Image (tube, rainbow, N blue to C red; front, side, top):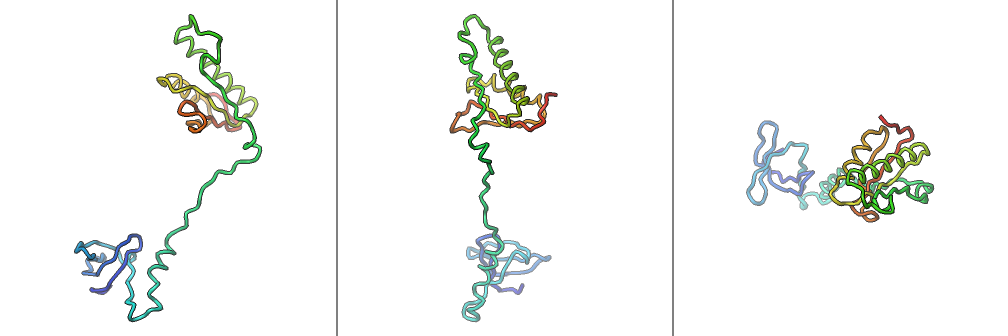
Length: 182
């Protein structure tokens, strides 16, 4: 580009005057006196309005062509999945036994994990694609032990369940059709 040409950057809101070309790079000075380096492919000359009004729109049209419209990604959910009730397993101890009196923390955790394992195996046998384990927040011991259990299975993905519905104390498990234990 010729020294003194007014240019506009393609990817930035930047306009300036070509000062010099050095080693294939173009040095451009902005209105504040800062000098920035660009490749020629990153710049568009600004056409003087007085000389050619028909071409004055070119920089904006080139920029709009370069920008890609943003598409919203919405997961496709079949009507069968949408209307199917979620298979939920509540691992709170008061949901598993009438009274935890006399049970140690180890026994409580073991019962919760055995319940989770049994329900997970049931879901695999019955080919249930999704389930939610409600473990609560607490100190996170049950959640970590549950994650350890889930990592032993092939063909499943697990992640935090819907916060609006369950809060921070639930894990959603997606089971692929050939999920098996290691």
